[in-house]
Image (tube, rainbow, N blue to C red; front, side):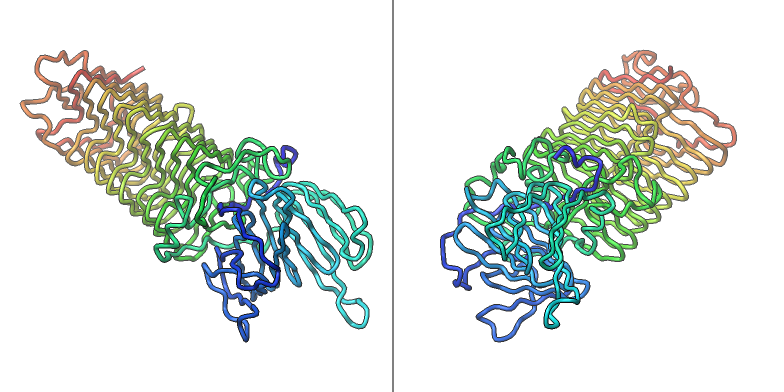
Length: 622
């Protein structure tokens, strides 16, 4: 679907369910053919076994010949047979039937979106969406179908307009009253429409029109626990949100072709040969902004409105990670993953988790995770492991005026590679109050982090932001890290329980600019640790200053008992190296502190600012 790049296609993320369905007659209304994966608002279901329609509920089974109706401001999503996800807009009604090799959705009013996974379809199998004046035959597609009743029909009956919008794949649309006529071929980013029995029209789907197509089809993810047998049937790692098999429907996002061309990859190993159903919430998600170079109407300081997960004034509880990518999958969004305003998020694990050789590459400049203001409780912001890789050209996390509580480090890299090249800080806290039981950054053996091309620091605190960590700010073990700056404070405070920077196990770190910039009345306080602690053959090279005070009224406070038998002084910094180690080889400092006039350097008696042991080395200066 190369011709869709730069427009606004929409990806429906699907879960995988075994394709095998035993052949039964269309009249077997007791047969389970699907499950409700999302329910926002109110909806009803009518079926032969019920005397009256009853309320539809999240995780309800859907049976053959069920009629589903949605109320105002309501959305329902139904996963059908593991190969199709149907999103039903408000004030819509449909009936689902099935015969050998053919599933049919009769749309009697409203608007639906559907994503069909071609790789799960059997040879010759087809899914049809029927309206009074059109039949859309689908084999591997993302599309939206609208049915609009208009006055002017015979005997007072409404005259219908059917619109078929195709985002991906190829759809054949035929006339139910003239089955012998050749069907119209509707390709990716095209819209077909017909009113009554008049001739149909086929037009391109513009970026603006593509955005409008999905109005009313968005809803927050359904987040809920379930019985153990339900949870055990999940074939993806996080049952409350979907990343699975996205690559099959959006080649420009996930790599090799798929969908309507018939040349896509096979299902992931966890799906092939499965014998139990899998389910995951799968909202309709905008994937590519019409102009990726612009973050949207909100600009860098506001939400784009295009995020995959959007919350406004909502309490959200998620037992796992909000977003995860694994099993070698690829995702390359140009829009944010999360935007939340005035909400409360409780995430059991990470906001983002990349593992299992997966590749995540964000091409957008808007913050990938944006909160303004929002309360967040999570284990971490990002975890990267198992050979996964992350590439960003913008900010990873921006919070404005929020309250953050993390049970571990902000960023945890235990394997794989992380590359960033943005002009804004990777973690940007504006007027936020944040506390972490861990630190800002933890990088384990064999991991690589390269932010040297980024012009901004790893961490930025501005507008009275306050961050307190429960361990070292950055803990690097046996890994390679390259930064432009470590942290920048402007009229803010950073309190570290542990070392400012801890390098162990042969870790290597280079900083192209200053390690810390402390500006406009900011305070950096380090307790029970040193500014720098290096051991095990590790090395640190800082081209700029260790501490660069900007303006006046700033303070650096260090308290520990690391001097042991005594520290040497280099400039105004007490440093510790073991006996027998040549000080001028272990610690090489040029101008470690800049602009001390009008600022405060408070290092408690017996405290070390720098500790170097085990053959490690610190070099500061050009």
